[in-house]
Length: 406
Image (tube, rainbow, N blue to C red; front, side, top):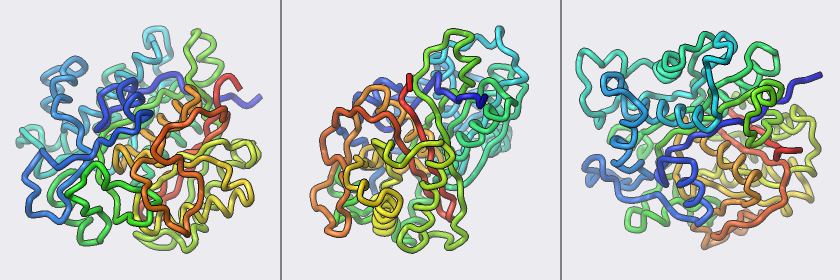
């Protein structure tokens, strides 16, 4: 019998809050976390807005991380460790009663955030702050876990890949529990300037809260977000054996490479469509069972166009009946953390029976005609949902979640 993989804990930090509860409340209410950049003087940049995590996070994280350890971590790493500890608390795991050799940590890490705006970097902590494996390492050390511990970098799909790898460890019988997710921030002058040079970012500086507008005719690029999302994956038998609360089932996934272009997705969304088809097959479901899609939905010209085309290719006549929304309209694009944060949102949508909206959908694009859940959250009876992540370099991932109990 194939072991089911379930979600037993979640932790989330974004521009909308430091906890899962505050984030979910603000997402359902359709609030934007995008504002004028406050961490540094961005007045000389073409883009001067971002979905920043509130400065209050530094104080909040002190309840989760010891002072000496915090001094060896970047702000981004502290977000990851804090979200992980909240996820473990949510899952009510007693590691003293668990075989630590069968517990793993996998994090999606594009960078550690040791940029020009990082504070208190010295010669003594530079190496630790810069280590791309530092996030899983700190978490493994916190709980003295002895299973696999590593990071993966596949651009904007990194933490989705981390979840997929965690799924495999459990399905293959190698682990009982996997702590997976990611954290990221590229809110700094050098990376904003780089993305501006690629014409990838929104420059709607005068109306920050309206700048991220996925699927709209006047979309002009993505808005950078920052944060962390961590999920506890667990084998169904292990979760039941310790009487764990189950948020949902991780039913399957697909990870693919387009092998096409370092920046642009394959024409007409063919690579995206292939990924969704493979995920549906891997999960052992029918396309008609899908009741919601949490889109990659970046608010860029090509992604939104091709993702829409891809959904139509996969679902045919059903495509217009499947609600689709982009969380990035509210929290921006959290880069390496996007896959896990949006997976959390997808699990919550199924668990709570509420689909978060796509805000700022004011001017429909005549070529993009799906149900994007404009402005207002919607009650749903959906039992199966997809979460899409598509990264620079053609790294694609689609995760499939099922409402629990199924």
